[in-house]
Length: 259
Image (cartoon, rainbow, N blue to C red; front, side, top):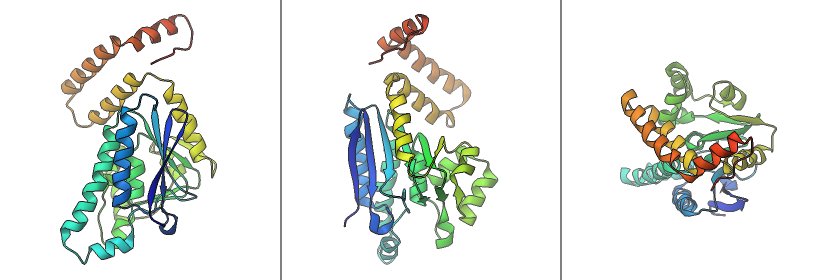
């Protein structure tokens, strides 16, 4: 069975399921292309408010396919470069996507699977989920933005330990550290992620898109640059019809209905 990225809708949420059960939902170039395509279509759809990425069965993703990596090591470096370019295109698309993206993690999320979860805006994980950046055990270094995202989220010493030692870290510990947003019982990650997505779907899409942009830029801008960016987004959103609805509903102690 070939690896594929299955798609289905639940209300206003698009669910993308990594399906490669023979290889523990290992990732590969075909999935990266499908991921970019799915998000591009979802961005243009007014009917979709959020996206959930999950893995089929009890595994989120074991990361890269080791047989493919072994074969690529015998070929020209450009072969693996092209594969990584495709992965990184998907990661960048997730970060630039203007709607919330939630990772629903059951079981292991290893290597590029961990990087993929980190690229999402929010992570919902089973209490039994485990995460690992085990590249060093294969004499490799991280990809998929794993080292970048971890370095923004955790202290340098802890990031260095996770990357150099390659040991597993459980979802409860990552929740304590603020990397995992919601913990749930085994088997309930997708259900809980969909509930969170439904909550976000009720929000103002323009405001959520601005918040995502501001969070993404916060670690890159100097304070004066970021204040200017906040001003730009605030003024734009204040003059959006959703702000009128939101302020009027708040003053009337009602639930707002946004476009």
